[in-house]
Image (cartoon, rainbow, N blue to C red; front, side, top):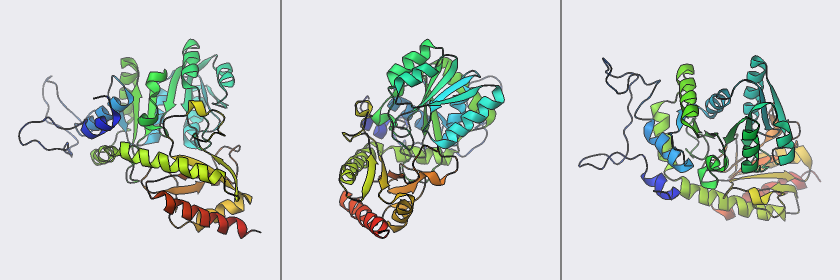
Length: 371
C-alpha cells in the first residue's frame, strides 16, 4: 500500500481471521499481567496496543521506517521534538505557532541556549543563522502568515551545520508533503487538527528519521509521561480514516475562497499558497486549508466580521469539518509582526457557495458599517 487514500482506509486494521473485528479494539487498562522476562506489554505509559494502529498508520503516511509516537497533545509532541536536540541555539520562524516559540525560548533559557527567529521563507537568512545551531524548527506553511520554506535546501544546510531539522507538518498534513523525504530528522503533528479532524480530540505525534532519534523521543515521552489516552487515540484513528476525502474538499474550498476574496472590493489583502500572488508558490504543499484575510477597515472591521458570520465559527484551532475563523493578534504571545487585522480562516467541508455567501455578507456588514 502506497496510495495515501488506501493507507488511511486499510492500515491499522486487525488481522483478517474468522470472527475478527473490522476496527481495532480500545483497551482500557493501565497495566498488564507480566512476570519474568517474556516480551509483552507491561505498563500503559510505556506502550499499549490501542496506540499501535494510529502510530503505524501515521508512519505509513509520512513514509517513516519507525512508528509514530503518539502524545497527549501537539504541544507535548513539539516539546519532545525540541528536547531531542542537544542544548544550544534554536533557529525558528518569526511567525510560528506562538506556544511552540514560548516552549523553545523557555527551554533555551533554562539550558543556556537561545532562540533566533528568522523569516523562514528567506532561505539565505535561515542559512546565515545556522552556524552554531543545534536545531532548526520549520513550519511551512507558517502559522498564521502562510509563508513557505524551501525545506530541502534548509535541511541540507542545517545538516552541514550539525543541526537537527524539525518540521511541524500540521498545516500541510502527510497528504500535502512528507518532510522526512525532504531531509527532515523529525516531523511533528498536532493531531488535534486535520488528522483527527472533528474538533473532539487533543492529541499530538512525532516521527523520526533514524532509530536513535526514535528511541530518544520514546524515552522522553515515557519518562515525562506525555502519553495519550486510549480513547483519544482510537478516536483520532477513526477520524483519520476520512482524511483523504476531508482534505480534498477542505483544500478545494480554501483555494476557491482565496481566489474570490482576492477580487472582493472590501478586502485589503488575502493570502493562500495557491494564489499567483504568493511569493513562493512553487514551494507550496499539495493543499492548504487555511486562508488569511485582512478586511478594509482594520482591526475594528476584522472584529466586526468575526461576530457577523453565521456559518463560520469564531474559534481557535483549525482542521475540523466545520469552518472557523479568528483574529490572531488577540493572543498576547502572537508575533508583533502579525497584522492586527489579520483573520485566520480554517476552511471546512461545507458547501462552497454557503461559505462564500456567509463571508460576503459578513464583509459587507463589517466594512460598510464603518463608513
